[in-house]
Image (cartoon, rainbow, N blue to C red; front, side, top):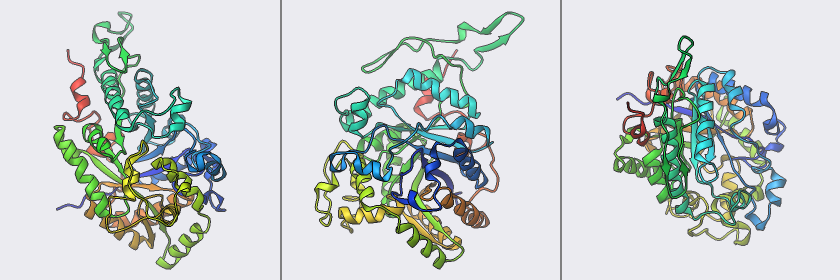
Length: 457
């Protein structure tokens, strides 16, 4: 059996402190340059040189204020605050690259589907079909308060709203305009044939969109769809809609459980389970030798902030870890935070007990996923082991000391994976969906729910 290629996404957020908290203080870190366009263009070019599928830009819509009931710890460590919009640098990065895709996190809870569909169609046009959307429903009360609500919607209600949101954007992307609606015919004076543009006429519980889409179709029509929720509701949503799923797990057996769960949901939704691609978050610290890599890790760990990690994970889980005994085991509770993150350190691995202090120390550099440390050979061995044991398609690679950790991976690990035949040497297609499914596949597969909305004469 031919071993599958390892697909890679570079993971960043337009902020200083994302997965590794406190490492912005390292003298090699350029994280503070997140406001500079050159920082993003150089990142995109580096990842394309490494033949990555995409740059995935995470996002958060509110300050992290759960820890101690205030935002102070997040501000001190620069944890996702300050943060900039993930969409606005994409067109510049696309202009500086030819093949790299770009996936951004955008919340269905706080967008309007009519305007959001146009934003993504615009990026579909400007990137030549290299755009993806990480669908989130948002878990921060601070986001809800600042975006017009007194408190956030309950966890499962957010997913019910997201289901209708998807119905609306699918109609806007797929069914409003025919492929040949734009004539651009100077002889007849007709730019768009009005008989080939139809109103959406959506009337639902949460959204009303009676008219046509404002935009003509892009290369992809529907952007490549990612999802990261691994709660019961999240797995169901991913099985119905996701083409790529982002996972957080610190053991391959845990990741395999999540993979199997989403694949079962995909089958239940009438989809080919193999069409859903799975990417586990991982951090790689690599050097020429194992000893040099371990020394590099120790150097990075000396800058990690335990309090900052507690503040970040308090917000993710919606549990104020400052109010708990740092050395007593964390117990699972139902929250309106990211339930998959709560499960990660409570129920998914019955063989291990996690305390808040142990969590903070563990995620200090690795950010909640595996930490692969060693020579290129050692790292490649571990990546292959995870691929095979967890049934993964690839990894979301974090960049705790940007751009050093990405550059080290591209210069040291990518050649080793290519030598083993586990990474592409050249891109075979030009669009992000072609990276998933092969040359020529630019539109959603026939078994994807968006396909049901395709324009028909």
